[in-house]
Image (cartoon, rainbow, N blue to C red; front, top):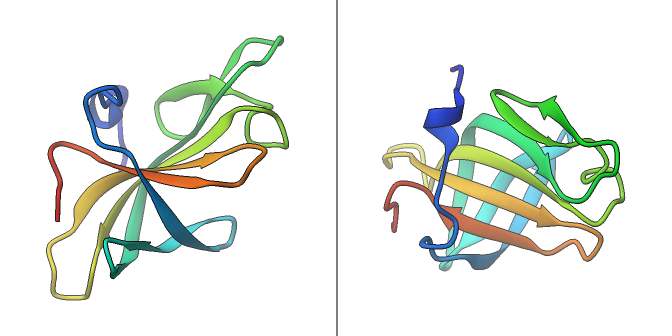
Length: 116
């Protein structure tokens, strides 16, 4: 599935943000624990970096502009927009998972009113 900027845009100021535990495989989220339920990531819709970078923004992932050093030990954030569900038969929702650098905290923001 190919995402474009309109598909992945989210108003983070209006959306709730919660700390979550994330399990990664091949350097990307594979599962996360949210509200006592284990979610399996079915697909990654987009992946990008945000943060200060004196070299300016670069194109990263699918249709997003970010900063190249944020995900490589810098002070920025590495983000993934994923489709995930709490089981094989459950409907998938769309979530933004954010890894804050350098502290390593993960946060989750439901996209499009998802609140499962």
